[in-house]
Length: 462
Length: 49
Image (cartoon, rainbow over all chains, first blue to last red; front, side, top):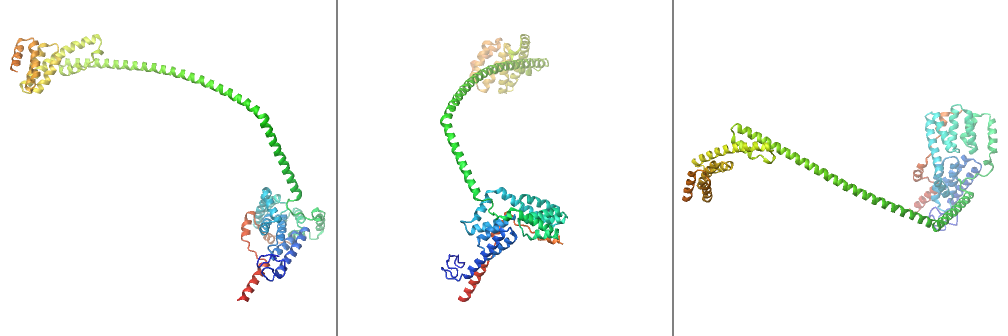
């Protein structure tokens, strides 16, 4: 046995061969634990789970490392629907011994069969809800939850007992009795079930009948199989299933190889030819599309160019019309100014008229107006320039006389008289060369000999 | 005659699967082996002391 003092194995059950401690009492405790385990096991075989649970729990209280007790206690819990308590025992057991321990298989079984595991856990949740409802005296709600719990786990003894009690509280004794029989067929000495049975059948007549039912139940004549669906038969069937799977996979691989070697190359060539054909068609369509696109583009450009030219012509036309209107307006304005005697402004307006925009009739009108206005304005400016000169305002005289010469284009007397005084003003401003040039023109072109002589005289004095 | 109210009180909620881990971790159950071991260690300490 394992010495509890030094945790080493000792063949001697009275004194530890390693640390020398007296382990005889430990040995006796271990024996008691095993005796209780055997008792529990025999009660399990008699389907007396209630007393088996008591014995096995006591066994664990003597030796908590007794994995046999824990494993069987877990099975008892499982058989009575308490999956969480069962798992707890198996997990602890599998932690105590990690090899050659059936508890490991039990835990793995539930890890693989998650749906069954969820159903069992759901039944626990429903039972706990029912307990709360029952304690709040809501038997109806409790019955609903308990029926669901029993649907998920038909061997759930606690749920069945509570369900029968709820039925009894509602005076549904027949229903309660059916449930009680079911409980006793699972756990033959269940104290709650027996109590309720006694309550419903005080004379015990129906108890005999019930026991007969229980006795005819095959489960009580044969040893109870506790391993939860992990049997040799199931293992063999698993192996055969794996073999079937391997054969199937091998068949798949062979088929795939044949397909790759014989069938796929032909299919591939055919598909490649189709792809090439489709690509050629695609290229042809693309070329046609590009050509059409280019044609359309060229046509569009030509169309836009024409449109552009039309618009330009329209703009030019509008500009011409605008200029014509402007020239006519100015001509009207100048005529109006002239008729009011305002020759200075009329001359400015006339000088800004674009004669190219006037038709023949308007051009004639323009020429007549211009001749009249310019002649008058030239004379006015010449007179004004002479005044400026006489007042010794030579610069003003120069500007005014230059303007007079410009307007007196065909009025030679006015023009050269103005030029004579312009020469004098320029001379006074110090530009002798310019003055000489003006005097020369006056001496040669002035219609009156008096101005010619004066010009020659002035020239000689220079 | 069963006292139903008292009978109902006998039924307690059962631990659910989600609580297994906590239950195992917090389980400090002492068995007879532990108690005996403790007694022996105490006696040993007294004899040595």
